[in-house]
Amino acid sequence: MTPEKEIKSMFENVAKLYDFFNDLFSFMLVRLWRRSVTKHFLNQSRSVLDLGIGTGYLSSNVNQDRGVFPVGLDLTRSMVLKNIKKLQRFSDPVIGTATNMPFRDGAFDTIVSSFTLRSFKKVGIDEVFDECARVLNEKGNLVMLDTAKPTNGLALSFFYVYFKIVNFVGGLYNNPAYRWLTNSIINLDPEFVRKKMFEHFNNVKVYKLTGEIAYIWHSRISKF
Ligand SMILES: C[S@@+](CC[C@H](N)C(=O)[O-])C[C@H]1O[C@@H](n2cnc3c(N)ncnc32)[C@H](O)[C@@H]1O
Image (cartoon, rainbow, N blue to C red):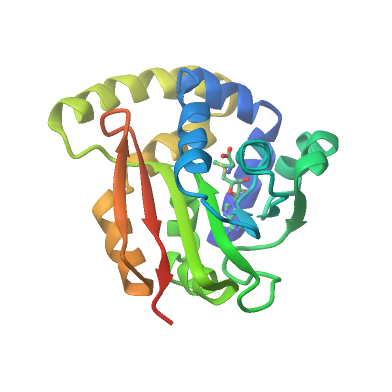
């Protein structure tokens, strides 16, 4: 199976309870983190792409906080269809892949993306950033939010214990998916993402959220 098919099949299998477990395992912090994206990084954004829109929470925040109707792209039909009636009230979802986006060059002034980098790393992060650079216009505002490996030893020890609980509880629902989830967090080095992003974009800044549990990587200008 190709990495893309693997990711797709995994999200197809967890789509039903994805939001429930996401809120539960993060103590609702995911909601706060998505809000940081829309509150602090979307000034003057008029055309927004939500890359890996999933069930649509980030797009709904973009719509509420900025009055913009984002376009959403996602690989997994079941994720998008889960709340489709609600989702279509605040965004325009499209099925497709981030490595080959079905949009014209310069179509958007902002791309936002939450909890997708771990999947993008698996399918080819360079291809995804190339495509981001292509579909962004000269305003080139790219905002990526994800959980990643903490660099602080204490936070890391806490993560290892906490992941055992997540693997146990999530494993009752879908063992391979929650194992993949926890491994993917430990395998995502925030510095790796910063360097990769800097190969494609200028002026990359990294922000730590809630200690070092989550990060926002932000860039304003594409290099191309
Ligand atoms: C962890 S979910 C995050 C969903 C949503 N952004 C959120 O904040 O809850 C990751 C999403 O990225 C999508 N995804 C993964 N790889 C992708 C790719 N190559 N192209 C488009 N979407 C992708 C998955 O289908 C899934 O819906």
